[in-house]
Length: 83
Image (cartoon, rainbow, N blue to C red; front, side, top):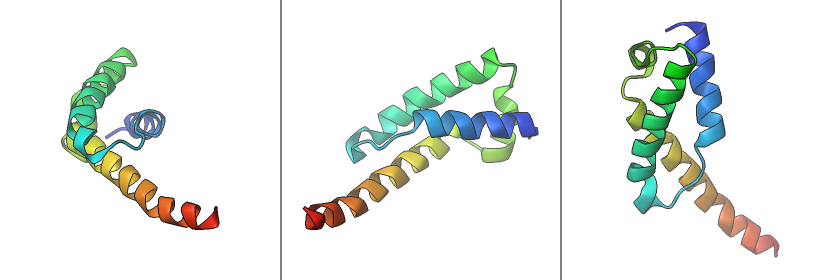
């Protein structure tokens, strides 16, 4: 995958992927994957270039959403203890 495609994907995920309730992760991942593919096409990056490196972008986004949800859950008890 080209460096341009890698930079695009990292930046896009960082901007768009935020903590979600576990029940909504799959739906949100589907929506974000479609949005990512459309935006990549707008800037001239073929979806195939991204998929060569990371595989299914919907699965990658779902994984990042799950990580964000878990990180949020892990931070909540410590912030409540500080109150």
